[in-house]
Image (cartoon, rainbow, N blue to C red):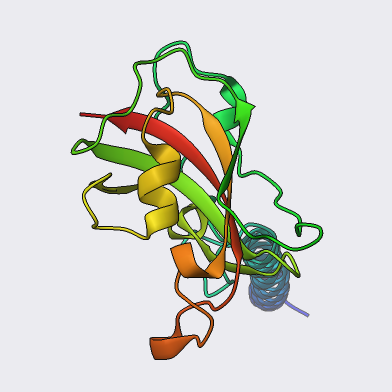
Length: 215
């Protein structure tokens, strides 16, 4: 073989070797890119999963907070509000701020009886004045309540001693000191009578009256 032929053979082998090396390098580069793409996809998927988990946990926490802390506008029934305490005269017994318990009377009631339960220190009530009172009315024989200003949450004001109320009140409250709590045992003829006409309470009655003002 001549020297020229050997040189051509050597050059061909070098070119082939270079081509093989280039192909191997290209394949290696493609494999690296494929690995890099796969890792990137895994990383993105991991981030998305983490985001979904965090958002889900926050949503669960919000639901639990909403269930445990209902707003004021929720449809749960509101507790009934207590009746406001009456405004008492200066120096009055604090007991006048609480509704009294009134029981039934005993025996036959044939005359008006006024019993002072708390003695007030204010001026005496005069006929023709307008008085402000809290009161409870019950049937004398049974103690069953038929009327009470306490349930209405507001004291009652009316003229006294001039025929605007039943006789038992007109006669029983004139002369009582403001700030007093008195018990009025009133026979039927000085109350609403015995027939209960117009749905009025019939028979003898008992009232406990707090005199809060007179003017």
